[in-house]
Length: 210
Image (cartoon, rainbow, N blue to C red):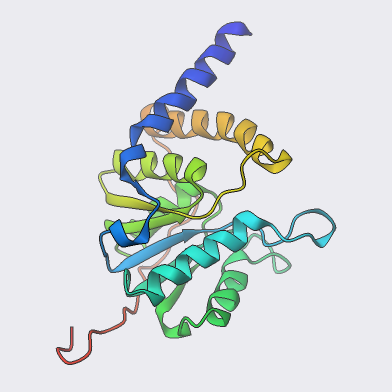
């Protein structure tokens, strides 16, 4: 048991350090790219309370578009039943932030981070883009994407540290990062579902048609 715990912790910090230099916290220093991938999560937690991890990801993604750092947003999340649809909810809230719906593309099969990363490339044709999430999540997402050969950087959404939710996320990440390690190095995991290729509409530059 002790060895297992040491392996989990060792792997956690291995992934923690793997791509930490590719995470940007200041939007002014962030290099522009065509598309940002916003990783989904549920909008509400127990008793209808707002999930601030969700809110801050939406805020960060909207900021990237409105400040001209990206020309389109891909939102990826779980749509495992007709009663639960993360991408649709994310789209609605991005539109409220002033993002034209034309430039929001939905990935309905982002059942987990691994699937979102693989589908961003295989389905939506991305290999050079920005990933948006909280730093603890970004590190795992960047690890997966870079190991798959994609040119990605991360933009950190605001985090909530030293809360009960943040401690729960740390425990979840221990096992999620272990699974990511196995997916990449041992299991040769594939996305649960791919499907036909889809096009992302990007905002054109005024005056030059690009």
